[in-house]
Length: 542
Image (cartoon, rainbow, N blue to C red):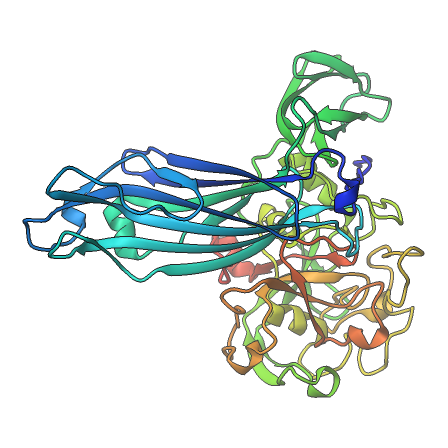
């Protein structure tokens, strides 16, 4: 059993509490990956500004160039394309560079980035988790040819808007949207923007996270970056509470002579687990399930080999999604959902610890009600939940799957039927600062028609879908995948701090991307057993 503590983040709650600087640093790097010949081109712009709310930055970058002649008729840019190193700079794009007399050169691809950055003190639920709130507007134009006068002509700009929340040490990768023809002309597989933002630090200042070694042989020597940091205790663990941020090499030397080596990334104010027998690339494995039999409701259950979680087989078929009486706006409609598997229980702290130890990811912040292995993991973000599910060979459920697994096909209000919630059926109505969530699977009276437990209450659970309050008006009748984009993800189920009326099976809520909440958790889904056994790609992709 992994028994490492979570490490809380002590971040400033306002600009007046800043421990280092009142200047914000933003780095915008353009990366052209997998070009012909396997090379990678990149160019980075670094800008500093005094803190405000928010602070605006502008930058630009170009890739390759094409030439035209004032004495030649207009033509397309492609045949005259010349590969050049990427150029970039701060501020507005300055225009084309003058060329030799009688000729014109112009960048083939121009990207202009407007970045608004503000400090988010984390005053939502996990008050101590501060971060930068990022809003990005990206415009991309590509050269289509030259006029008769030799002036460069560009196609209509493709505009993309994104937002996220970056905690210390994190970065935001944005794929650049391009016309397919332009991508082919450049000979590039993809172009990415790498956005980093944070407080400008004092020269020489060092920031720290923590590293916890677990499941080592008692007495094992723990070596950090070549120096002995200590020895594992009788329980096989050692906590190093002040480890400098960045990549670190950890070696665990057992008395038997065996040596386990790990490279991990330490993030400010967070704990990274290192388990001696848990090395893993974090890549998605082929799904592996073991049939355990039928549950009391009569549906087959499987044990997921990667993490031991129990999944329930939900049969294909139609169900009524939405409830006008309780939700008001969502339009009730019939939806067909293909067969799938869903975790019987919310993902627990113990299982998330194993994932963190196997992949080198930092643990989430410590909830005020303490760290209990059989409680649902809290303060995880949507991207971390998604990464966990993919690590097990699964995925996050769609909103339609989540509702069907909760209410079945008879149109019931609650997972257990028509009677309102009670403490014997669900965890709800608790207050912040007092109690929090509770152990999973301890309320069988709240079981759904398929045997799902804690389907309502305890934790709001992430779904794959983007949130759109009007999506039901245009959603397809079979396996709706959710909107194509958005600013928030769907969460379902209500939580330990919800009012009882929120626990209806059709209740919708949303979580802004990048946010952590003490009442946000998740469970995983997977395509049908036959598809999982065949190793097919998931039917639903993000």
